[in-house]
Length: 352
Ligand SMILES: NC(=O)c1ccc[n+]([C@@H]2O[C@H](COP(=O)([O-])OP(=O)(O)OC[C@H]3O[C@@H](n4cnc5c(N)ncnc54)[C@H](O)[C@@H]3O)[C@@H](O)[C@H]2O)c1
Image (cartoon, rainbow, N blue to C red; front, top):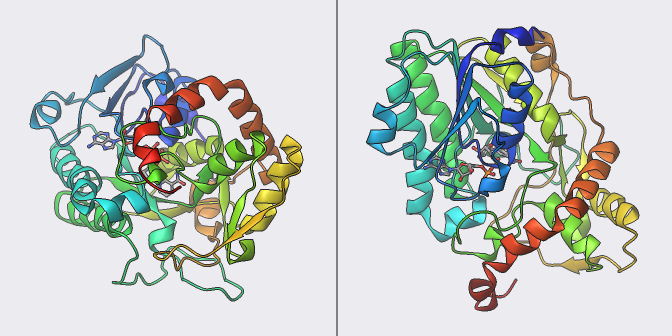
């Protein structure tokens, strides 16, 4: 990958204080950019994620704010759109907040960027979960041309598809050079449990399976498994994801879509066992009923197109990635504890 194209570039990262965004910003900083502008309203992130570097400028606020949009530099080279309303359960609790932060964000940003002359590429964070086939049988790899259902389990999932649709519209009508990166399940350092504001359910704190399992495991708690842990995901380490996003910006075809994944399936049972092994947690796994909204089943993504067209391969294997994430969590336990604790009052009013 020719990373030097980022040197001296001016780059926008919307949602850059978030888990993936803050890791992406750190990777790009190694390529010597002129400036990285982060726009983030800290709805689901913690300001400690923002690197203190003179090349990074942080603008606090929503990308739907017309003043923020009007003040965007006209000579951006690249933009990454990672803002969302995190996550599925929060969007079910408040579909309007999801619309404001997960759909309107994409529409207003794409509309504003379509007028920029020098923009080489905009990369949109799409979601593989909104496209993947739902099955509990042996899954096959989801390819980029997989038909998309019109029936979705959450407003979050609907919004991620609408983001792709608006991307296609602005690409066709206004030649906005958008590349859609379909994320599989990302894990790794800087996913801070409880980051940001209360978003209506306990999942404000327990974001995704990996950080939740690591935190509970480090605290000697039982890891909960629904369906006996027989669901599976394609887990990709966040640094690989950041490299994949950069490859989309440099080599992705304008208007194109790429899976960013490992192509490997890991069951939730396997994930739980690896994590407990690293932390030394001996508490037995806990079997619980399935979540009522979740029909997601087993899945993994095809990596062929990203390998062929972007030259992108995930490099960090799941055991190594989990090991690094456990160590990061140990080292950052105080920040995470504080972040969880600020929701204590709301959590106590609801069952976990
Ligand atoms: N992490 C994953 O496994 C995964 C999987 C599929 C897709 N994605 C997508 O990748 C992107 C990044 O996900 P993440 O895991 O880093 O989540 P995150 O919650 O850590 O990051 C999202 C960021 O967007 C910010 N934000 C929310 N509303 C905003 C607004 N109106 N204006 C500006 N900023 C706003 C949040 O404060 C947060 O910093 C999201 O678009 C998400 O849908 C992530």
